[in-house]
Each structure stands twice: as C-alpha cells, then as structure tokens.
Image (cartoon, rainbow, N blue to C red; front, side):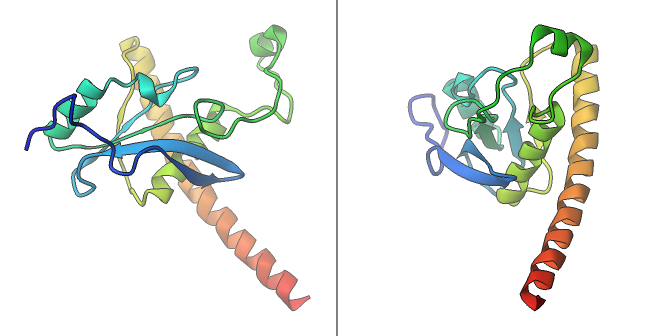
Amino acid sequence: MSATPETIASNNGERLVDVGRGIELCCETFGDPADPPLLLVMGLGMQMVHWPLPLIAQLVDRGLYVIRFDNRDRGCSTHVQIAPPTPSRLVTRRFGADQYTLEDMALDTVGLLDALELESVHDGQPPRRPAAAAHLSAAAQARAARARRLRRSHARAADRDRRARRRA
C-alpha cells in the first residue's frame, strides 16, 4: 500500500529518547523498521516538523525507514539553560566550559542511534554547498565512530566505578 501525504503517520508518534549525559531528544519514525534507515538531520535552529510529510511519505514509499528528530534546545528535546556565546567568543572560537559544541550534538545523535538500536543510517541533510556537505558528512562520520568508541569506554569506566562503590 502506498503512503500518501494524507495517510502517512509516525510509527509511535513523537517520543522522547534518552541519549545519555542528561539529554533527551524528541524523535519520530516512519515506515518499516526492517527497511534501510534514513536519518533526517534538520540542522541548527530548525525543528523536525520542518521536514514535510509528503517528502517523508515518498521516502517510505521508496522502502526507507525514516527517522526525524529535534536537536537539543529545539522542539520538545532537552533545553539546556546556558546563555549563548557572545559574538566575540564565536569569532575567536573560545567558549566557556559550560557551552556545548557540535561534537556534543554529534554524540547526541549517536546516542539516538544507539537508543533506536541502529548500527548505521543514511543521513538526509538540507541542501548546502557541495564542498561543505562533503566536509560535514565526513566529519559527522568520523565523530560518530569516535563517539561510539568513547561511549563504550565511558560505559566500561562507569561500570567499574559502580562496582567499586558497591565494594566500599
């Protein structure tokens, strides 16, 4: 049966997913989880609802399992109570210790993939200059691989700490 813009509905509605480090991301999934997954990344400052349902319906019709989500500080996802960096800090790239970075947001995305039990996904990003898109895609893949290694390492360290506290 073909999905149409009028009939496409998310699998479980919007839901909050704990991605670790005190962050919950709001996400929605569409289509058959057995199909190849496609992660729609809206980008900074936009909510997942800006991905049009007719587009999502077409992607599902083409045999994809579609996931869209809100980054932190957007939509129903966790809002961090931190003042944004000043223009001079943005220019000099000197951020306070309490500021989060693009790498933190990449870790959020990796946490979402882990929570949804997805090993890998295609990433759908809004169009941008080709060179920038290729760079961001490569950076995202490298960060995702690093994030998975860090997550596993942190989980092992946390387990050791819990065991040590129990013994004490």
